[in-house]
Amino acid sequence: MLRTFGPRRLDDGSVLFTVHAPACEKLTLRLEGEHAQELPMNATDDRVFTATANIDPGTRYWFRVPDGNPRPDPASRFQPDGVHGPSQWGDPDAYRWKDAAWRGLPKNEMVLYELHVGTFTQEGTYLSAIDRLEELVDLGITAIELMPLAQSTGRWNWGYDGTNFFAPRNTFGTPDELKQLVDAAHQRGIAMILDVVYNHFGAEGNYLHPFGGYVSPRHQTVWGDAPHLDGDGSEMMRDYIVSNVRYWIEEFHFDGLRLDATHCILDESKSHIVTDVGRAFAEMQADLGRELHLIAESNVYDPELLRSLEEGGYGFDAIWCDDFLHAVAAETRPDEHMSDRRYLAGEDIDTVLRRGYAFLGTFEQKRRRIPMTEDDSAADWESLIFSIQNHDFIGNHPDGRRLHQVTSHEAHRAAAALMLLLPAIPMLFMGEEFACEKPFYFFADFGDAHLRDAVEKGRRREYPQHDWTDTVSCLSKAAFRKSQIGPREKGSEETLQWYRELIKLRKAWKQRGLFAGANLQARWDALAHAAIVQYQHEDESAFAIIRLGVPEEATGDIHVELSGDVLLSQCALPMVDRTNAWAVGTLGIIVGEGQIRGVSV
Image 1 (spheres, rainbow, N blue to C red):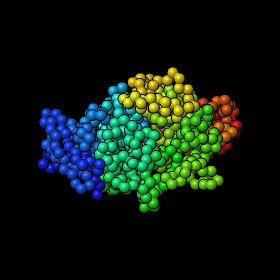
Image 2: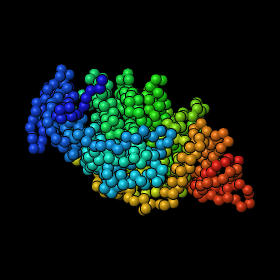
Image 3: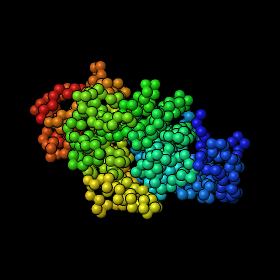
Image 4: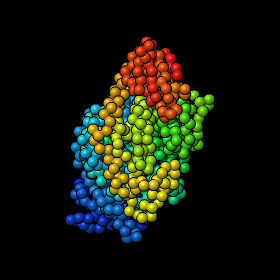
């Protein structure tokens, strides 16, 4: 049975505070407000401290540790003044849910939309995000992935510096307002996925050390302290992670979690912590009676993550597989390299189209390129998440530039067509659908001067291929404010309509049983600089020819012989002197139903 973490209301109305603090001889509960007082806590032999108090929701409190300093609750449910302030008790049962009829979203119906709450709207709150949900319904989005919400330091942050894993970020609103957002999404048929970070604690505001047992004595990461997941005394922290997983699903009704950088979770135990997470999801799936989704960011293809628990795997439903993103970038941005893996133009896009991935790696197996001659079997397409840009890909550019800004609108629409017309789960990044002209910078608000300096220098060192002169400081308010996407009316209506039509077509083909990995044949035509995508199911067929590449390398038309109808096109025209033939220009696209009879350069 899992340990209990954080405060909970008892049947008599009082609140029981529970703290695991193996390094402490004693702890004191310090209540603030009208009935301020300090209460000594009772301890068990294994240093689990408890105290009971009659308090109202909204009461703030600390735990006084043996060195005399007051510290926030390691399992705080809310930090109203941020990471350096007191914790706040709130009644988890106060919110009245309206999503009783919601049964979740099947994985094969997922069209993901990644967003950062603080920059999705001008107000940057959970409640203001509700006002934009109808836009996503109109677009055809079926699932939202929120960037991390665990409380991190400062007035603005991407979210990957969380230190209070159970506390939704204070600058976006209250926990009940987050529930309101999830509830509103469910009422519109949108599933909600939350990005969580279990590979490190943020570098500022981590007050867990004096409690003991939370921070690893063996491992350290470049981003901050590593959680204590292996070795003596690690059982408590492992339960803490699993309790956190269950907390977001059960208390906030999220439909799934995306685990950040699973390959960076340092755990040398016989059973890796992600196995425990997989088991928790399997149990919740059975208990809650709704579709749940466990997603891993692994950067490369990891078949073990997708393998079932019964087969010795980890039980994940899907993985972020960045091979597609980087293979597309190798065609559209050949002079820029955004990964420590080198992607080869022509070769890797062909491999990904045929098999779904280029590189493979597991927790035990070093990441490496897998040639088609070694393994040509396709991955489970419906378990791969493909994108053409995400928070990292945009934000790690010094100017936060989006795909259409570093290529062209035509190249952007071509890449979008390829993403949306493959059977992998597509993921858009907020504003992508209307070619938002606003940048998306990396931003953080650290107070520690040494840390601020290290972050500024570290970004330049990590991405030396870019020109960092005259860039907006990632620690400035400007970096945060300028990243707000603004209204879609200020973007490209042509691109917005393009996305609408592609998503609509994707759903129609899927409904007819045509759109599936088993029905797919795809390859890269190096001479034509084009992806050739074809589906065949019983007597129905569909196709897409999508030309990528920089104009200097892919000049001139290609000629395509068809039997069928073209439904969508860009930079392409029917040939007047040949029946059922199209001339497809640079960055041209034709999408339709029927068959491709031939492609000539």
